[in-house]
Length: 171
Image (cartoon, rainbow, N blue to C red; front, side):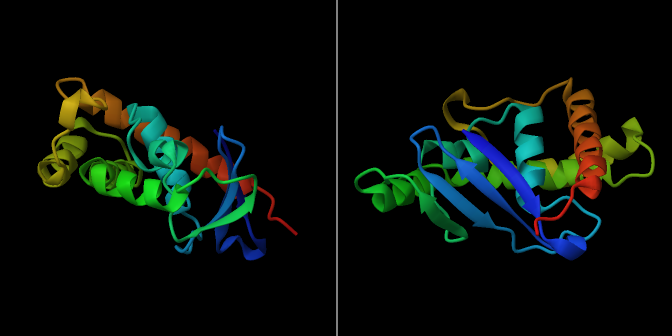
């Protein structure tokens, strides 16, 4: 799957173009106003990649999930695509919630003035108890190396934000 993120003039909103491996292309609207922050979907993309979350939002899209914010652009959709998408969303509900909460944690860490172990532990204790368990061992479990892992993901998000701020808007 290939994903490209594009921003509109004024840097206030964005969208992504998703080219799935089955040849179907979607354009996904970004509903949050990015301003000086990463768009929500790009943040998920970075965090899921950095944390090795294969069953999150983007893994679900690659597997066939289609959200209401996605418009079909080209390619032949597989038979019963809507039913398959609904089944995937129901089956992966906990994994999707987990990906959302972990992305929020990493964003909170990235917003820290300085990455200190104390602050990362405090944020993790606050946000991680709400993270649903992972069924069948899918995705990474976060143990003793979690501070380093979350710190690395937050650094990757900060680097991506720096690049995003320099991204030219689509005309």
